[in-house]
Image 1 (cartoon, rainbow, N blue to C red):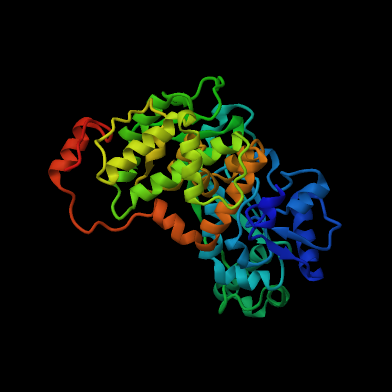
Image 2 (image 1 turned 60 degrees about the vertical axis):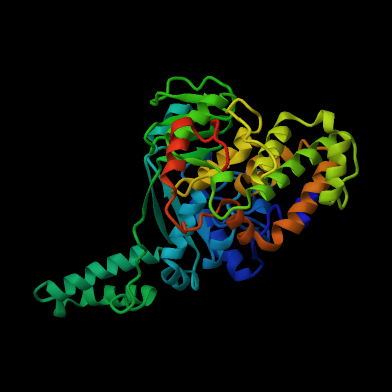
Length: 446
């Protein structure tokens, strides 16, 4: 993993903590949450305050995420909103934390100027020892306060102020006034600067979880289903349809019925041919690496030459994408690529809907040779795959991502997965034909 770390592709964008004051605040928060402390005087934290260095020191990668549920967090600065979430057990956790920080940025900025904010993503489940327990998770809400209890103290002071204003004779209650003055020294003027964090509750309908080898839970769609990464018995789940990644036809039907994906050749404003050629290059690079080829500094021309050299060994996924690319460039007939074809999922992307990131994450696992999408959409799966690759492929992939993705992350994501507003209404005839035979039916391009 050294290459990834050096290029900032692993443990990148973490927040450095090296100030004695911040370290001391972190330790107070850590002790209040876990009863533990760190002896390190310098470390890095992610959006939740998790530190890989402290995880190694404590020999506990889940020291802020006991049993992988109810993620705890420590905020030292609002800048943590830009950091990744390491050791994620649920796909929704980073989005929840980021929204919480951004929606309460001003209040959190004021609070973290004096103390650390510690909290937890709370649901009604404290352990998921069996897969069915995941379905008990319906909503997630956030509990947070400073280690000195500033928010709780502020609420207490507000109640005293209300009592002072409404209770008869409160003006002469020296004890009440003394308590109010004492609390105000801790909180400041809560009448002019009320210390409150917005109450936020998040529905947990569709999500990925790392538990039980990886599961995609879709229960907030018209036709609910669970898609398991591993082909294991998950027991009796409160959902009718359960598939594994091997059930390609069933997954394709699920995505189609719920209108979750679109063919990249049908996407507006997308250079489908260029994207297909890039995916084909990744397939060639994977094969060439297996054959022991040196891919250092390999260009597209080099990969074309390697593709010709190993043409008889290129997999069906490459052949299918090549046929579709020829059609997209007006050089070939429409290829019939059904869900049982290895190229099928490589030719799809999520439609523009609330769960687009989750669907692209699923597609990345279904298309492991597309290393760019795997890295962008599913870091954990990328790192696991990276550990199994030959060194030639590791070198090529890191070099490619460093040159082609790291320099313009937002632009690349927009080009691959973004959705521009339609310039005109779709033509009814074309839509009717696609609806009638499906996206990969016998439709010819005019």
